[in-house]
Image (cartoon, rainbow, N blue to C red; front, top):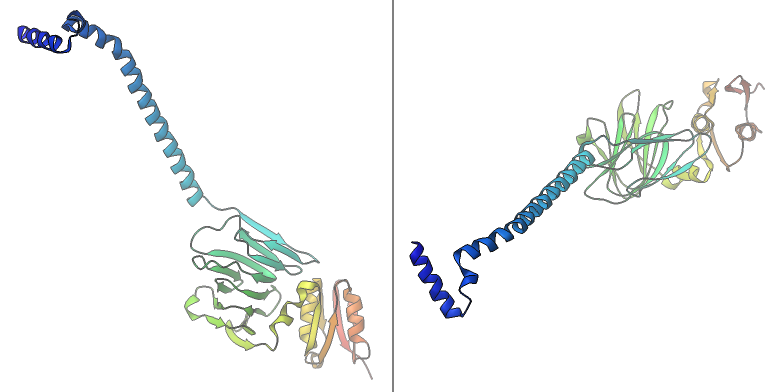
Length: 290
């Protein structure tokens, strides 16, 4: 076998005019041994690079898993005797009325964008057909894709009212989303807390529902009972009507931002058949004696 190898090598040398000794079996092995460390280092380097890449991939996968499955921190914004504008992570614009609270995630994740409201707020929802926007207000849930609407849901009130100004919304009770009321502009869905019922109402001018955004209190031929309810929410004060005959007494009035509750009550009572008294933190409206 060795003799055959020498014969082949001699023929190769003769055909290429290469020096015979340079390509002998012994010399070729020496050259190969010199090159082995470099080959081993190159293989080791490739292995190191592959390990580093694998670690990087695992880190990315771990971060992605944490991002997708870790609990999202919640933000809560509350107001006192002022209104406040809020921009959500999806660029939805919200104006929060006095003595109201909005809770929303630090970032929206999943199939929908959900927030919780206590009090009153006006929404201009950023459009995203793939991720419906949902507002939970007590027992009511309002679902939209992109629209303008107002929700009034103060805890002390007997009802939760959703009024649509632009677009379309579906209003339902939590757990009964399939039985929703779909509103058109200038329509309201009113949830009665006692009866646990949801009814549809038509508004003459839905824009009057959001006059509060500019600090305006607009009472347009509405019962004194409704005026008292709105003032109680606006000033976070217990106001009561002592005589039931006064509850349906209709009035029209407009008050601008900056007027105090006492100033408003004094103007409402002027030249009317009722007055008011204040005891501790409670205001009582009573009928004047003839």
